[in-house]
Length: 213
Image 1 (tube, rainbow, N blue to C red):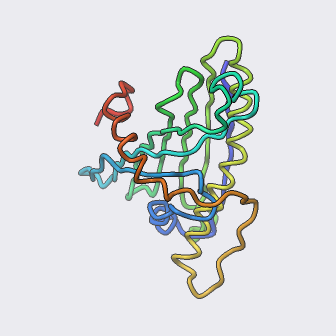
Image 2: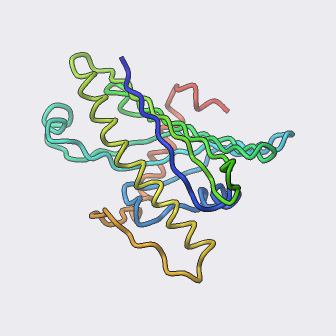
Image 3: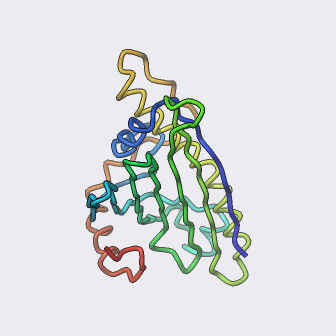
């Protein structure tokens, strides 16, 4: 059994601006849990598709039951995820796929996002999101999948608000930035330098198929 969530987000900016803003969205007030980002592959194909791969490090705060069972009282761990993206400039479709590369003995969480111009108004962009969570630990599969879905539903809204914040900053600098809501933790990206080496080490040692260029 796996759990699946499908959602959608509407950006009031054209597709080209949303894609450009995507690559500039860190840091922002909503993504303090993102510690570092390292691009390790990028190319432009003959048919004008930009293909990129990067590894991101982020904090993973555990629930209390998780602290006791899995990490003996440690409230937070560092999670590493691979993000692969394809930007089709001709068709105006930008697709990202992310999946965790550590803690797979517990569960795998994979997210796919597709950004397209709104057919009714090309000054807007629609992002369709799909996430699949699969628990791997016998006896805890359903619990882990439920936890992953609950966390994703909260975090995907913050991620979308973070991109919106950057889009306003980039393309509407004459206006005051939108108010920041629902954030209690400070930005922790000051730790990014310490984590870059760890991320690169995981890239080299991982046997995941998504790492093949």
